[in-house]
Image (cartoon, rainbow, N blue to C red; front, side):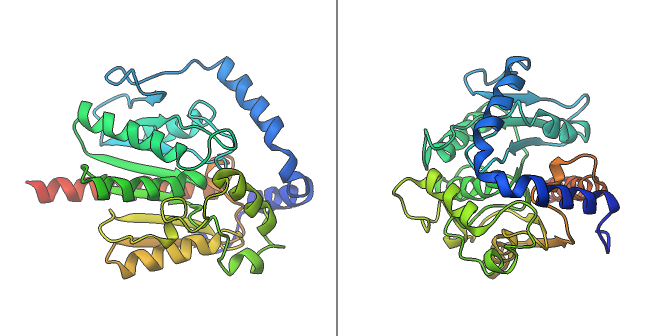
Amino acid sequence: MSAAASAATLRTVAFLRRFVKPHIQSLTAPLRAVQALVERFSPERRAPFAPQVSGDWNPTSGAAVATLFYLHGGAFLIGSPRLFRYASREFAHAGFDVFAPAYRLAPEHIFPAALEDVLRAYRTFIEARPGPFVIVGDSAGGGLAVSLMLRIRDEGLPPPVAAALSSPWVDLAASGASMRENEERDPLFTRKDILLGARAVLGRQSARNPLASPIYADLSGLPPMLVHVGADEALRDDSTRLVAHARQAGVDARLETWPCVPHAWQLMRFLPEARESRAKAIEFLKARVAQTAAWAE
């Protein structure tokens, strides 16, 4: 991790803070329109061995290190596997067979719709394909990844060997101290924005439901995880508390806090920090796959 933010990140943060943050609540509809346009010209590519599962399949060109489940973000309000295909491809180029499962979005489909969809996809994949599996998730997808691993554990399904999470949204109650401490510094979100998004996702359900907000769950028995988050994010303490609670539960959990970067900076491929963060996630996942294989011998 760099000791200071790059010039590209500083310029990006200034732009987001000035031109995007003031209008963040009104962007859902236009972003959904962009998503529909992208999907119109990007046909869905389902996995040939699991054609019944909606999603996007990006296999690597050679022998795969593992099957990687990629859970996209978008506050559960926007996003789709095809919209984030460019991110999936980065992991496919690194040697993973990547599948990004489609999941239903709010407010049309409230919790636990997204979790049910990705759990159903995971069940199908482990029945149709040998392991190992790893999981990557950013933002809402990061929180969804933790909830998915909780369901995998509770149902006794074969678990992934590791997870790499970017700024996971794991507390829909927005109770972390950084929600207020970083409200001005965050380039994108205020606490109010996050709470409004959470209400759209939850309907009348509790924000402290441990599967909606896994910060309140028993995290024991989860796979090793690497968590990256920005120091100035309103969501910073979702990550710091997640890692602290996971460690208390005996999980191998690692946290890296990055200076200045905006939320979900890993998706901004023009930033040096995005490439560095992704490279560290790939290194972590490959190391855990190799370690698991060594133990099995």
